[in-house]
Image 1 (tube, rainbow, N blue to C red):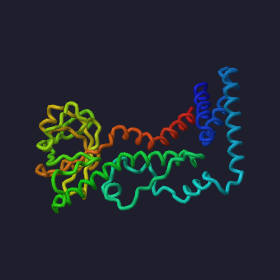
Image 2 (image 1 turned 120 degrees about the vertical axis):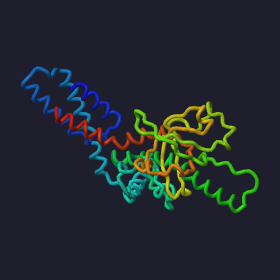
Image 3 (image 1 turned 90 degrees about the vertical axis):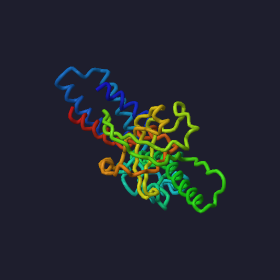
Image 4 (image 1 turned 30 degrees about the vertical axis):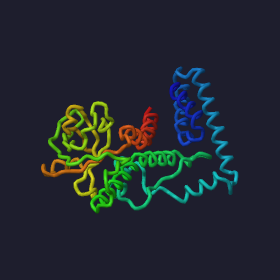
Length: 305
């Protein structure tokens, strides 16, 4: 009980009214305290004082929120921002959105992705609004370089095919390209089935693989055998600088894993590596999606107590 009250007090201090939807947890704890006070001597003065302080602070925040809602607001940037957000509900639940890019929705999409601005002045509508904004912005932050890089590569390639770009090939800024990629064999690891691949290194003689940031662990790569009409998403699972000199690398497919074993051994892919380091995004995106799960689990645990 002391630990719960300590955590709840910190939440009230950090998030203010954002904690009020969890007020029922405090009510449940009050019932527990009342029952223990009647039948045992577990409840001491320290718990009683902490309980009273937390309840008083929660009452004050609830009253402040009620007064703020009762006060009419018909102008100003906060009201205008709230009106715009109300007019742009999210098209789907962000928890149902894959953290990995989709070829139609993300790579070849003609419309701009659905994004909402971070609230700088005023407050978010609720926790759901905050999580939705952060997830979509963070996801777009690592997908945009991949989308732009693929489009730039296709445009440059088309210009080369038509002979409109004389001299050296233009350097791509958002992706690195690897040609003639072959899937050699599956590799059994504690993390699951991974695959060893080989790519053409004839154009990469200048790369010092031991010190290069190319194809480091966790990097996101995109493989396609049909000019990016379809893509297969993978991440770098293991790199060995000596093997990379021969173009060999171990990757883990993140999408369409069941179809990988059905691919013919002669199929060749073009592989692009995004400049955004995916591993830094992966865990944050997953944590944002499962936040409500932990919230519900904590409620269930307290109710069971």
